[in-house]
Length: 198
Image (tube, rainbow, N blue to C red; front, side, top):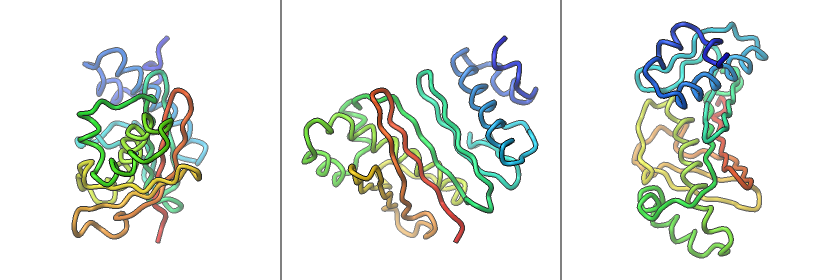
């Protein structure tokens, strides 16, 4: 029996035309999200993405989903405790030069170039993941789109933290600068950001 058997009909319909890998990722994420939400007291509902592909969460709750090869992660919270969450997990790998040019700002490239040589191959995927997590956190608040070059990071490797700052003019102050945390192991890079009330 596959994980799809535990989905709501609306969820199965959403992925009916998807390839098996995508269906498995989607189903695993929804099952994990419902279990996590259940620990907070949420009533199970279909978690079908909206037209903009952002996840739908039960009223009074927020969360974020990410997956990469053979790995899925979900974070959820009550909206009264956390306004928005952003989570991203990536396979640890070197980004090709074209992607690095797309993702890293000139200041980030300069910073990465003077870091210890052993760290340099991991820094571009870390920056990619941190920006993805930031984007997921800010989007439910702004419904605004950001390119990679619109966000610049300051990374503190020793503490496992970073600050993401929007370079785009007049971005809503509540999400114009947020701090997050990152974890790196042999296989994956994971980044998380939260926006707290007030």
